[in-house]
Length: 206
Image 1 (cartoon, rainbow, N blue to C red):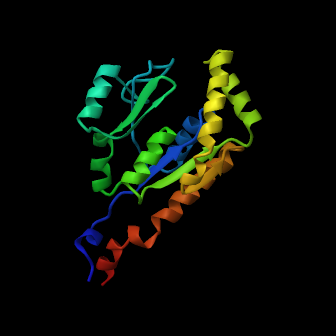
Image 2: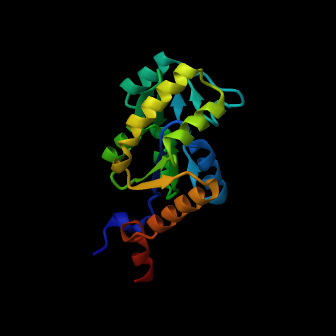
Image 3: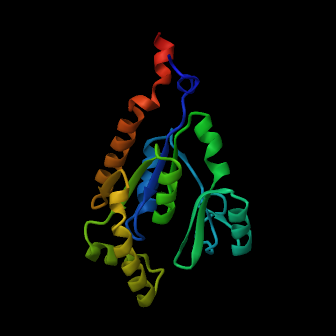
């Protein structure tokens, strides 16, 4: 007998993580532009906006006091502290979309990604890695937003974070942007066809 849950399409939650400098932002923009059915969840952060970033589009920029109040009130699906700033995904950004059968993709820090997998084991987690530490160093340097000390700190953090790659469902190397994006789109396409995600279709054909 088909359960009530299988009568309704439930959206898929996708987690995208990786060390700083692996090109997550660029990859995410390309993935979303090529798959218009994906809904991008906007995270909250206590860090100041960078040049060109827009509140409510790139992040919700809030102060530390308000962020911690939201933590106490249980308003985050996940949150983490990274390089002195807090980042988190509000439940309000995710729940409604998933219940409406829409797929949601999160670009979040690795600690947060692990939190999501514990809370939502069915979430699809993808870890982006650089082809080498040397390439990662050059990418961070090219961004021009860090001094040499901060850059070395980010590299040391990245080396630690890479050890968590095995906790994710998929590891994708970002050596060539186009290939990286196509690999992620292929993962999403395959995951959408898993039987437990499309059991609701059985009710329609019986």
